[in-house]
Structures are given as C-alpha cells and as structure tokens.
Image (cartoon, rainbow, N blue to C red):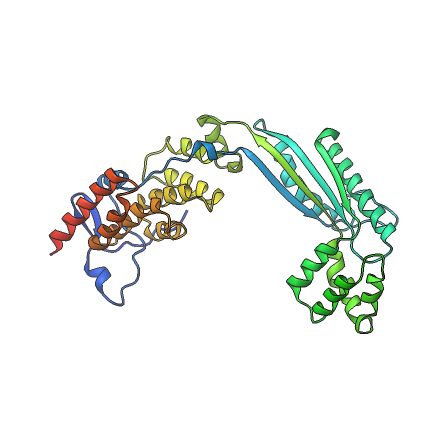
Length: 360
C-alpha cells in the first residue's frame, strides 16, 4: 500500500470535495497528489466516476507461458542433470510455470512445445544431433517431473540457429556486424560460411562470437499452453492474491463487490486487475475510479494517462480535474464524454458548472 501524504486544502461544495482554486492557480504550485474524502464524499464520487464492464467475449481463459533455458551438460552427455553447475536455476524457470498448473484444480494443460537449438560453430551433423537429442531428453524430463502425457508434448529442434545469431548481431551491434552479415548473405551453410567467419579479420571476431554470441544460441525454448475454467466469486476471492493470473477481469471484479468503495481492499482488487491487464482500457479506467475514491489523484492520473486517447476515459479525466479544483476544465471533459456516457456525463457537467458559477 502507498503511504498517504498530507492532502491539500479541500472545500466541500454540493457534497463534492474540490481543492481550493487558489492552490492550482499559483504558477509554482506542485501538482495535487492526494485529497482527503469523508464517507459522504466517497459516496458522491462513486456515482460520478466510470465503472466499465468488460466485454464477456474478450474473457479468454486460454493462457500461454514460455521460458528460455540454458543448460550445462557434462562432457559426452545430453540428458538433464538438475544439480550440475547452474542447471538448478534453469530448472526453476520451468518449475515456476509447471508447479502451479499441476497443483491447482483450476487449470488444464493443453500443449507443451519443446524446441532445442544449437549454435552455428562446429560440424552441422554434430549440431543437428545435439539439438535433437537435448530437446528430446528434456521433453522426457518434463514428462517424468510433472506427470505430463507424451501426447501433450511436441518436440522439435534447430541444428544451427543462424536466424537467432543474426538477431543478436543487430541487437548487440559489434564492430564486425556488417562484415559478418555479408558473409551470412553470400555463403550457404554448406558452402564455407563458417570458414569465412573464422577467417574474418584474422579470426578475432570469431573468437568474440564464441565467447559472447554462440552460448546464447545454445538453448531450449519451452511454450506451455493451458486453459483455465470459469471461476466463481468465492474461488476468485481465494485466488486474487495468490494466483491472479488465473482470473479474468470479470472474475476479479466479482471479488470487488465484496468490499465497499473507498476501502483499501476495494482499491487493491482493481489495482491487481490493472497490473495483470496493463494495456486494457477497462482495467485502467476502473483502477483510476477505485484509487480516486481513496483520494489518490496521482495514481489515478498514472492509470488514465495510459488510455487518455480512449473516449471511455474522458469522464474520469473530468472527475479528476474537478477534484483538483478546476471545474471549468472538468466541464470540458464532461462535454466530450457526453457521447460515451450521456447520463453520467451530463449530471457531472451540471455539478462542474454549478461549482464554477459559485467561484465567480
């Protein structure tokens, strides 16, 4: 929870808390961050802010998670040794995905894809064998460790990951990038490409590739797809703080109904929702509404700035502007919002114009 800062002076008009106009008209005044609301004012603002309903058709309970694993292998071995060198940390990456799925009653694994990659150094045949063997043996490890049926796991491999190497060259941009890319374009895998790379600039770039680039290409990528069943309000209340990733926006908002607007619990549910659906307009607008009812204007602006181009955010921008003591500015936003939420926006516009008239 955020620490509540001391609020600016507040005036109550029509049961609306607005920062005294003088505090925002001083050229050097800092932005208003918090205001203190009493219970009546929370109730009034609760009728003014927007509470959007998620589109049921967008409540997709299909999930996908992925991990990139870099294992160390004893000489001459292709199987997974969890306690060898840094392998335990790599195992933990897939464990964090699989353990929750295997230990809860809400999800069902649909498909696991395992793909092994080798780097371009060395004979092609050896790289092909390594990539295939290591991806297959890791798939067997997943079946044993998590009890996953063989039919749910697909296995593939890439003998020499030239595409990944090219992406690394563009991202890291070493001095020899352009010369290396020319060699990749002009020479095929079986037509001396690696030999030309080894001879480039006396072999110095190739030594750097061996040290900095190729280890990043020797990896196993795992993609886990699973479905989550529909979850009722009681179950959602259990999961909101433990496995919120299993919930849809609708299910999260069912939990919020157990709490009174303006309370910390009510706010937390909406902020959890916005955290897990960071690009969703509904999640951000509703989170702004929830934090406004606690008087936290700063956080409300943080949410609304992410979606301010969407007309569904305009009513809340008007309410925030009003809370900052600018009824004239608020009226502009409420007029814009009339086409989206006519009844609420018109009622809010009347309040803003009434306060503006009293200030004259």
